[in-house]
Image (cartoon, rainbow, N blue to C red):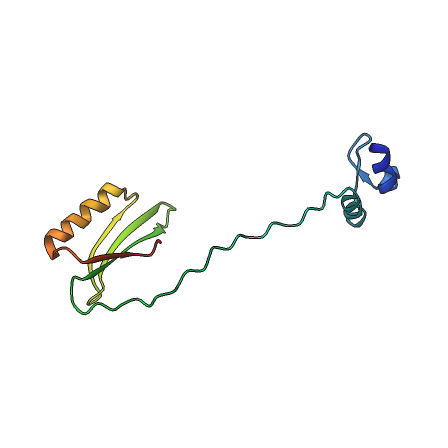
Length: 132
């Protein structure tokens, strides 16, 4: 194998990189030709596309307290420390019901915030989030 590779590369000691019988040619065109001859040139993998979903227009609520929108946002302070916000919005009048800011917002804390808002404003019919 190494003699066959040396024949393909054209074993002249001045234009190779490495040591021993498996020296690699530094000429990129010659190296590509060797890769093609050894069938090492694999095609690049393409991204797998997700199946397209049926797009439905968002229904505008007719009154207050019907649909709440829930969203998490992240940012960083000047010193580099990250923080997250939990935003809850009533879509009927675009009123911000609550914003919870912390370095970490675990699920139990999000549930506690939502329970407090339900006690204050009442329970919505639906809760909308960006995540599918």
